[in-house]
Amino acid sequence: MKNKNPLFQFLPYMKKAKRSYIIGFVFSLLNVGLGVAGVYVLSKVFDGITGDLTRQIILKSLVVVAGYGLILLCSGISNYIRNIYLVKGANEVYVRIQMQVYDHIQSLPIKYFDNMPAGSVVSRITSDVNQIRTFFVSTFVQILIIVLKIIFSYIVLFYVDVRFGLFMLALFPVMFIVLKIYNKLSIDSIKGYRRKFSQSNGIINENYQNLEIIKAFNKEKESIEDWNKHNEERYKYWKKN
Image (cartoon, rainbow, N blue to C red):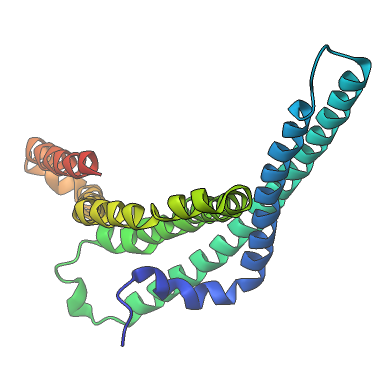
């Protein structure tokens, strides 16, 4: 049975770049762990402080601050390495998908292009595939970080208070329902925006290739009105996102 979730269709491409993604995931895990460790170290500044400010408390605070600074340095390095490997993996996925789309278009019959503007074809090879690259470079990374932070947060919650951890765990069904509603409301506008974006590229390409004909028949005004119409429709879809 074919999986309806389109994200699973990218798994074969991600498997070919699994080394980059595994290293990126490990450093993402390290980065989130260092963030939690930084909060724990800062808490030691305030633990056990009673009475007046003494030399011992000042020295303890300086040691903790130095430790926190070291954690921030390690977190910055791990974040830099994580970005390098995740972007590298995203670029590998992007190149493979782009080449596959290009090869597929080359194998299509000529009649397929009879009613297909050249700009729309270029948009599918470049802009649409580039959106996939943008997803893996930024959105996928943010999702990965958020998921790891949630996992670490729940580990801490269950460590501090099991009952409170169970109460917070009960919020997951609510979050899932909200996400499903948002996805249902936004998916049509996103598809409409991408469709209008592709059509806009087709209009640009057609107008550029037939610029002499447009000027010869004084169709500049009609071309601009058609372009503005598509832009307004695309803007309406963008506002709905």
